[in-house]
Length: 285
Image (cartoon, rainbow, N blue to C red; front, side):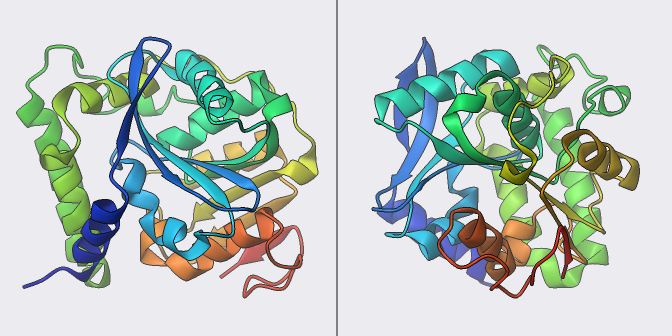
């Protein structure tokens, strides 16, 4: 049976192939969508390549200048933050709105602490503030350098398959992610993404104003429990906090239109409070 999400993603990727870019000795993947509007930099989580945000990139094409990245096979959060500054310099972008999901959300918070002058807004999505609890559980308890890659991939597969069984409406997304963890993300990349969390530095204080901070969470996120969501909001004190009532860990694909609406408002492409989310500091859909 065909998978509409995979077909849609593959069609986008064929039209916008990932460019390999050497930055400070590390090879990143970059997808750039040209546009005359404000800049937007998208950072995926552990299980997505740059094109995991294809639905948002399609919807915003022409209205924003978009960069989305895939992680390199070396370095960690601190080095990656500096690499992203270099990427912005290479592309002639002074300031950007930065959205990171999951692992990318942790990186986005770090970036906002050490390079605040490069940000218009930071959006921390489906992410964590303190990595210590995550490090107590697989796969982070494994030897991420030499542990069998089959075991690491199988662990993700079990979790994703269980989510698909309990959420049959999201099976297309689960199948797409199984393909990512099953090999579309190469072994060296996958190992280093996991090490990004395992070896992550503590987050310094974010140094952007409250009205430039946005958080996104989902009430049914199986990977980011409630106490982690509370920690993120408590630490960042966002000007706007969005909560999906359903969407799991990947609302950018499961509830793409609402996710795109968050970006439209953050980028100033629509009037504040004019989307389906309404207005106010806490917004739930």
